Image 1: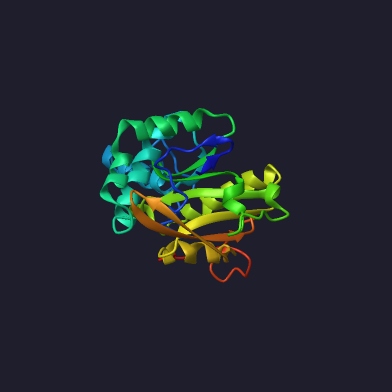
Image 2: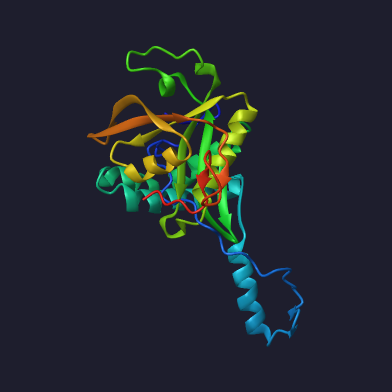
Length: 259
């Protein structure tokens, strides 16, 4: 139902999942860290001190990059632990169980191998902490309740999933992922974006609102393993500036909390 470009996403992949973490200042590494173990004021006190300092430097470096097939395992793990933490009350156990199978990882691996895949991963140091999948919006993602398509339907991008592992929330990863997806979609001619969220997911809705996205009045009910699953659609700009608190309007605050 969700597309990564023209490639269909894994069956367990769902657009309802969105940012469970939001933007917060990331600790800055020491100025001009020297891998030799020497500091400006003299030598570090042995290998344990150097190892501890190097660990802090790695933890401080946050980034977003395009996903590759080797990321399939971590993407699957993040999806599993985040769904289990956030949607245990909304989705039946058998639906959540599908995320804990070799098939789930293989489905992501195949999707990432497609040349049109638009999947990004957020990293902090050596850890993968979140991911986002986006692509051209299929007709069913942008149609109105009566099936009519908007005039700009061929210029709309779909953010089908945006997840940050809960323990890595409030560190800026969600905003950076959304900004990267927006830039990629704009580069392919999209002029606005849409996403679908569970109606009860006020945390994710708050995050998207900070980015200038708003509900457009469209809702749908899906069948999630025999249980109705109500979603609402949000739409908004794809140019997502990140601003520091007090830095003015028009961006997602770098320390915003979606919860």
